[in-house]
Image 1 (spheres, rainbow, N blue to C red):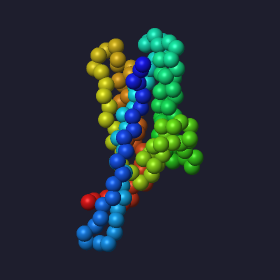
Image 2: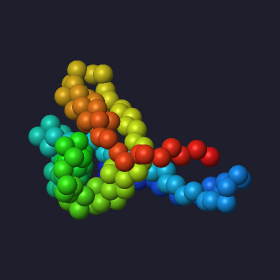
Image 3: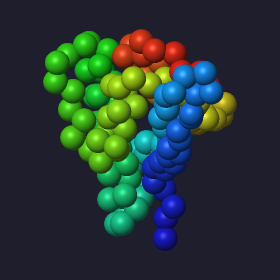
Image 4: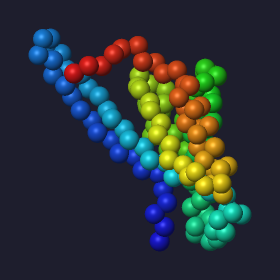
Length: 136
């Protein structure tokens, strides 16, 4: 059985203000994306190949959403995958996003590593609707 998948970990929290009679709500979402896979290079077949295709299609949908957000288009296709639908508030909402990329320095993995770095760079260029600063 394979363990290749995306992981979403969410913490919801509320903070009461001592100086004001207000309550602020927030959400911390940590996402671990499975890497894309080239089927011809990995030799995956059967269930593993089907799993790799689903992972690749969700990553492609995420890249498309990021691209549409960068272009400031009116319609953002969040519903094209479960991943983008779950991340819609984090991608286009009032949030702060940070991408950490784990990649291999080995020459055989150059293409995958450079794609991962390019993806994180593109994600970092999306302007989010962060007009308020949250402090506790």
